[in-house]
Image 1: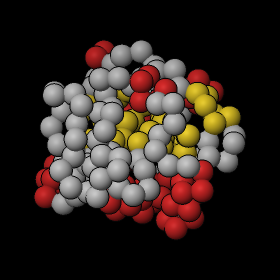
Image 2: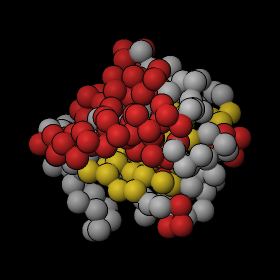
Image 3: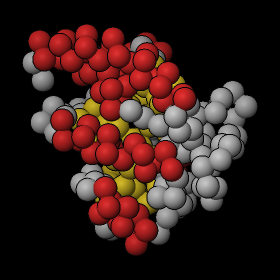
Length: 203
């Protein structure tokens, strides 16, 4: 992605990111699998309710790349080790979660916008069966795959970063596969695009 394009995106979106995070805090919060969108249950006491607030880590602060592999809901094998060199957006979701449904159009827009920029999106769903997950994808026009994480291996690989019962959570991995940013709760297009742009700008 040309540097000028990245800089232009970043400067515009940085100016809106704080406002977007604040708006998300007043909108939908994260929810727990099996609930109806009420108060979220979060396992790690260090996490607050999922308000869409984001956290970033500089390259020097980042942990090692998590080892995440499995099959998507269409039965295709996926191994994030094969995606090194691309920025990867992991979105942890399930179909009955209201903020997961609310953010779906923004994720579709992100996938379309960055399709040619070395950015991949991968959903991670440890709650739904294939029929439910694929119906969700069809409803919202989602073209990127979702990993079937029924055994919670992807969540375990990101222990300390992804609250086990706070959905949605979105993690941006850098080109080396290391976690660079995280959103707990609703991910707006403006906030997520700004985080992606920052990682792309690292080269």
